[in-house]
Length: 313
Image 1 (cartoon, rainbow, N blue to C red):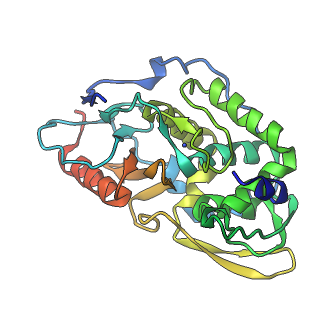
Image 2: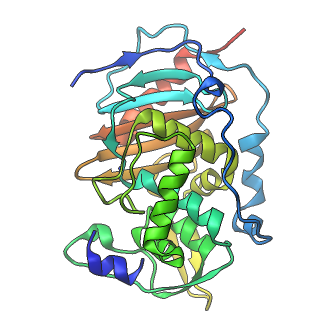
């Protein structure tokens, strides 16, 4: 990453498997303690209450299974898969043990550290940075003073790199990155490495299996992160009242079955996408890494899962 930017404002053999009976409660993560969480009265005000019921008050159905894998469509991605988030059951897995640059999928981990260690109502002075040599460094927000909650939302919804760097500077870059790695390790993400908080570094790498761990822990312990990403966008205000519209980078945002997700793209990673959908009243994660068209690949997988899954009797 450009050093001036970091100072200023601070992700072969093909494996395909269908696994019919898998319960992640028996994995190496069992028995690990949840990370400590900062308690703050203002935390609930950052989210619309109407989005909360769908996430954790779903009808209690049995896990879904796949009766027939013969009709799996051709997916143009290096890594892809699908999982039942609540049970951990693997519905589809293709090269999910291989490490791949995760790009801005990193920001899910960045958000967990920020929400754990920085009260959402904290004010941060943000300086807009422009680096004409690399458009990936451009921030969407103008200079001003923002709440931490606003920067988290902008980072997740619009995948804004400047917001991520501003959050990192609150704790200090080294301390923040160290906490990201500590958290990933404590969750059992042994094949994950993070070198920067935005995902621009090619050294930010993980596997599909490790990303499932991340998504399940965020789903259980930081549900506000996926609640934030469900919408098509929002208006962000500086403390002085200046307003800017932030649009989602996720094409499925706003759809009735979309429960949240995160986009990621660099030249090295190509198109990465995490998407959570409601299928048969179950929260289903669809992952694609290294796709030429990540939204098309995800749409194919979602449609196939809906057409070929059933509730276990």
